[in-house]
Image (cartoon, rainbow, N blue to C red; front, side, top):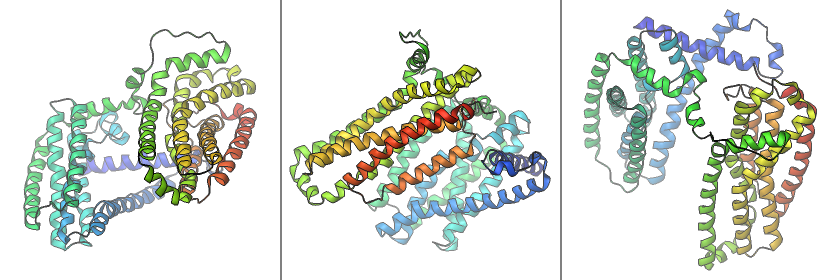
Length: 509
């Protein structure tokens, strides 16, 4: 069993190391400094393995520390509860974690390679990884709880967490072997959500058990955990369960569930009265209308409901408007916040992912498709469609914010500038992601992002929008700046697409 764990660990390290080298070889500037035979460099592999072990250990401990601090210590400090009360939250959060996360039932590519492709002994693999996972969980929680509680209580609580995970894992294995996996996972998610709410509500309203009762429950779960381990030890159909899990994840197409996606594509015959690239795009959008517009409709409904509630308050409770009017600086300076909101809501990246997988991946093999004038023409067609798609919910947000400014007794031109600015923000993100798609083309045939540079740029975009939330600028200054920036960015983007997309818009090997 130890040899099995050793092999699985080596396989996991090899997978991580090769993935790390792959990222390096696709990173601009750095890739030109690396030798061709990088994958065969044993010294580098050993160094990467050591770095990976250190990083895994540090990340593991940090995750546990952040988990304890954010979900347990912080509420305990803010609400000023008795010393033992945090154990009540630990109990419910442990149940939630056991229901939502089971390492042995998580599907990962290294497990797929080990059990399906390399045909390692599934029983030895599961038992060895389970023992390692439970030991590391116990050690991680014991170290964290040791510093916020007495050692004995930390020991008992850590054992309880491991017992819960073992017992619930055994129940899941038992159910997976007899019933539909998707139904069980859905049920676990619902139960976990209910327990999460109950845990914090009872904690907030002081409905929790005494320390002795919590410890008694801990002892019960420790015993149940032992029974769960016995069941896991005797169970010998792990391979069948993993086959079902991997089949659901569809690893043959890199975890993309094409069946679910194809169900949302119109199979009926679609027609178009347009010609050339306009006709091609029109047919594509009609056939993929349900898949591409589904989330847009949901966003419109959510934004509409929030806007109606906010405006109803101003209309039917005039005093609210007067109170906010006295602090109108805060309302007027709220415009930068919507930049981050529209960044979160924008779905251009998902649409371009679908465009590449279901259209561009095939057409990029033809020379005419990569001619500058054709690329720019299709870019403009897609840009119009995506602007219209993202403008639906942006229009609702813009109207709502403009009316709120008006109700707060601000000049009409404040509302006008705010409306135009929010619409420009939506257009900016649409142009931004579509331009990145044409200048970097980050996807492979399975819709996976393979360009580290693209990830870096999108991460910087997120940081920029997050920073802008705290920017204290009025509607006039920020709004006019945003409108001007959007016009300039649009012109530059079109120029860059025309000049460079013929070289950059291609299929990644």
